[in-house]
Length: 428
Image (cartoon, rainbow, N blue to C red; front, side, top):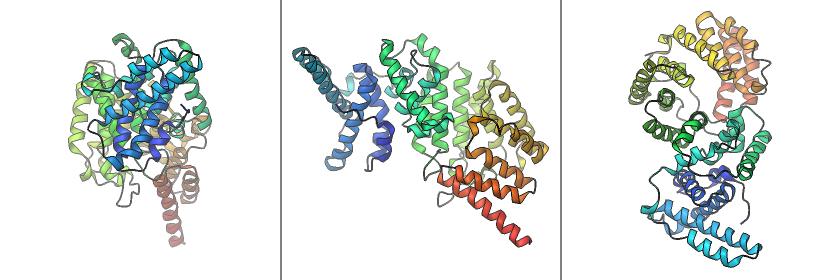
């Protein structure tokens, strides 16, 4: 079997009416095949071949009654072919044929495990043979459907570095000798924090795509919410699981107001808050309110609290920025994430004025994780505009636009620069 090594890229380039269904089924099928055959790299290739077969046959023949079972069976046959080929190469054809036939038996939906295979795969990817960073990267590929470039953007590292990390992750699993299978309850507890971080990154990429023509990818953010709900159902006493689900709901509640009729970005302060999903906001607030009194408060709960303050303001000018600033002060003590520091600078500017925010940004200029990233310059441009320095703001809006890989964000930043240029021309 040829090594396709295309992962999420193939899913993103399929063009047929069943694209969404295949995207949803892909991680579930991969989880089932890996669980059966215990070989992640080869199973990934087999599933990709099954998806390609579905993309060609389903539009012509119709979607089968059990599409998940169909994909699992086709992938299993590909795995069986691989087993035959490998064993034949070692002159053990008779063993291979028997084993391949046994493993490639028709899939009966009733015989499959009741576990959600996507969630199973999520925990499986957080493998003890991997560093946390490598486990997260591999999971984002297998479960989240992100490309290597998107994962690199989420980690603030070059794409080539991330490609090597994912490749090493697969190799480490192969060399470790540790079975790639559903972890025990104790192992799941040990891997939970890495799983939550994966879900957080998948949601963020779905909510604001790092690249491409669309501001968001609803399939990713919806899948992150779905999986987090499953984790929460099984970890009711974990306040950070509740905090993460609350954060997702409170943030996703604004989705309908974030873009205009042509997909253009609408910033938070200018959104029509009547379009916000009040049901999601109420659910998120309820989750957070139940979690906060239980004891230890973690970063997801703090971020959810910040989102709740934004969501509960009837108008942008009613936002309780001092409370948001205080929450970011707490969050800074728990994380050195540069995005937290960037958002803290914005909150400080809203409370103490733009010059204070600009002063805090200077400390981030030497942070290599933000080098060549557009968000630092976009925030700087916004604060310079607040300070009345339109010439410098135009320069930094254009600099940020040149670095943005997302078309809606790039267009928004260019429009901001053009708007200020027009104001300057009128004033002169």
